[in-house]
Image 1 (cartoon, rainbow, N blue to C red):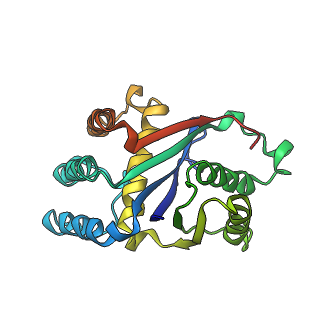
Image 2: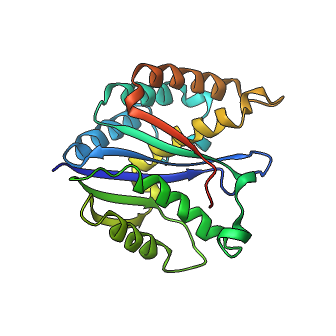
Image 3: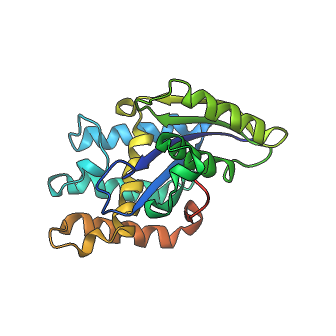
Length: 224
């Protein structure tokens, strides 16, 4: 049995509705590798003078060397894998399937991401980027449903919210998801597109083509 840490986040689910595609994703690493990889991330942050949280929204040309180093780290760390689902928000019918509860629909996406990824015989510690929910039981409900569904298969050791500001692997997951959302929403074709972000996405795409098993995305149009 291998024990994994899984770091989950989302991109664009509350953003401009003209960006039709939202992304739910996660970065996974063997639990025994976590401290070493986080140490590498902290080392890069120190080297490039990054003293605050990093991620897609913080991506800028004046930090180009740091963000390119993150791409390089992801390409080198074969123990890291990233998976996301891309959903067309125009296909989401919350009135029909969620009694009008958009938040419930959002957590169903997390369920779809995890239930199809967690492998039989392995154990998982799942960490979700904390956010304020209308329902205070949302995280616990997701945990209970996954435990029931995965019974006899994968072991869900924990599922809990964490603050992203002290979780660099969630920040790295956010960066990867932001790039996926940028590409799917064809932001590079907009008049005010960031040349640096477009180049960053191209560089990341090249890396992920070279190590395809480490990055997987799926488009869902299910009843969510």
